[in-house]
Length: 305
Image (cartoon, rainbow, N blue to C red; front, side, top):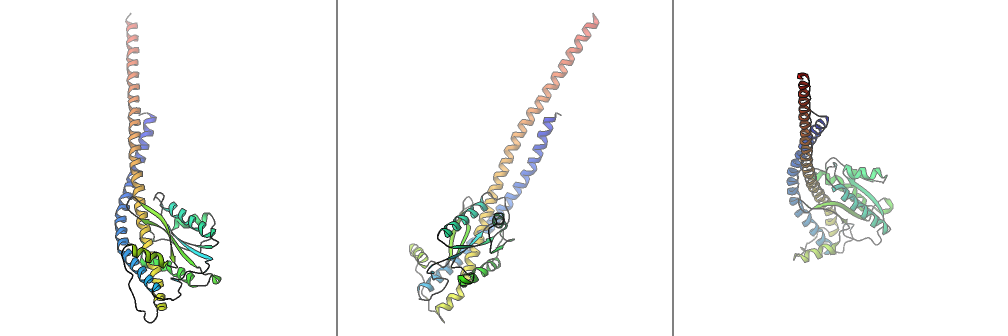
């Protein structure tokens, strides 16, 4: 066997092993994304209805509360970025990080200081490499987040929004995550969690033909908002975590499918090259045999004379 043929065979063996790995990862991601989709579908109605309840309380009373009251002059904002702990997901993390950087630049252009909160090792590594300050970070659960994880994330954010800016508090809370649209489409978006824009929610409800419910507050609207504040933030963060997880699994599935297809194409190309090399070796051996036979015949004919 020629040296070139041995090289092709080693490369085919290596690519075949890689193809098996990427195919397995594709199948794992496909099974996980289905579970994540179900969790997103289950959590979205709760988050939506809780937002409508908070809006109804805010519009039905004149209570000033951090949940619903716009600051006169916002000077400090918190940005929560949701990334993943692992890579191999195409542009999933880079798109989310890019959206967070664009939001941060926009807020800083408005004269606001920005405190960064990061979920996921990929986002944290990006900020650390660039020596950017991160107030707090969380990791280790992005593939399968739970409501307890959302509560742990929400706690310092709620504390920051309730503090005065002079004491290290913030006026606004923004979140950047990847919205799961379909198996083929996932979009990095940013939104403001606090203060809740009552006009936008009310307008969205009226567009859909919905009517905000009317509530009687007991003991007061402020106490109701105090009770709803952590629930609202936790539910929105939990839903965003699930959306991000589903998007990551879908992106991984798509990336691994592309890698598997590319590996198959490369194996086919290498197989053709290996066949050509084998044919060249066979042709050379035949030529050598024919040449040797001819030389032997000539030598035999000469000796007969």
